[in-house]
Length: 145
Image (cartoon, rainbow, N blue to C red; front, side, top):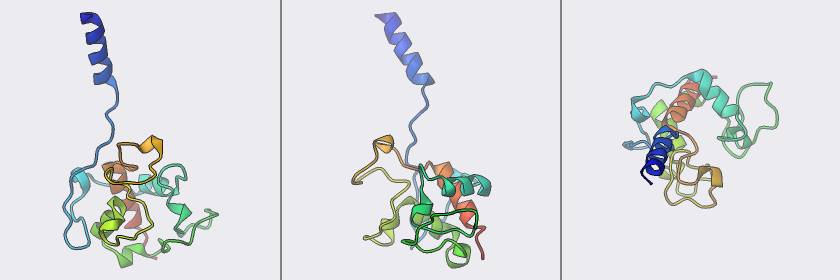
């Protein structure tokens, strides 16, 4: 019994922790401080935006990259987003766009409470981690044209 308990505790300690929602403070229409104080990487952010399995941004948005095909038109184009929104405004829209617009169609990428029709892969965890949110913000901040 004691060995089984020790093995279970060791397995739990070795298992990767489920991503949690990072604390944040909304000021007006933005979350000014990077989540968990993390720095984003624009290259990783570009890969996240293009990933059609997780974030799936391209189902609703276009990006300024002629190599990408089958992009959506439901959301605004992301070209020039860095001229329209600050990093803090982008961050809040990624975390939970319903904080800006209660009828937003865009999913909350860093929220776990009060969601409907959640993909079983994301039950109890945000779609994007704090690091991934910061990476996407870093990428979007490069889109000035």
